[in-house]
Amino acid sequence: METSLRLPARQRGVALPIALIMFVMMLVTSIYMMRSSSNSALMAGNLAYERTLSRSADYGLSIAFDWLNTTASLTATKGLLNSDQAANGYVSSNNPAISYRDTAYWAGSRTITDPGGTPVEYVIHRLCQYGAQPYNGGPPDFPFSNVCVQSTPSGGTTATGARTGESLASDASSYGFLPEIHYVITARVPGLKGAGVVNQFVVMIGA
Image (cartoon, rainbow, N blue to C red; front, side, top):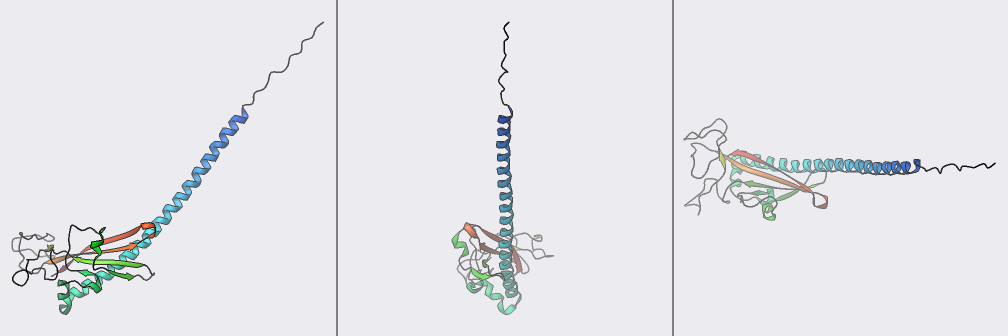
């Protein structure tokens, strides 16, 4: 009598490949989460740093405006606005072809330090075609007739009916009273790795 012995079928492991796949997926997920949290922290730090620079730039704008407003409000000093005042970062003309990104834009600027010790550079431009003369200067006292960005004062109208806030071109309405002259104040704060902040606003002050 012969007895046949059957060997058990060879077992094929399935759990090990699945475990390896799950391990790789968990590893990739953990790396992604770690990079994501690092990027979030970096972005938060960059935003906080940018806010700090922006506050410093606003400080420069405030200092520039205080000088401009005080100078324009006093009869004894108002005439200073007809010419450049390098000590106060004031330029009595503006070239619209030059951007704040250009080095020439910052000619005549002033650099100060905010309360936190951060250097701030600012420049004030009178929005006039020609400097070193009044907004309404021209022949025979000056070689060219000046052209400035002007607005009707609040509550006023021009002799030809221009409404409040309308700009005045050289060939547009003439004012029967003193207009408001436009000035633009620009401040910048250099940052690390070439980064920085530039803040700017326009001021209208009566001529």
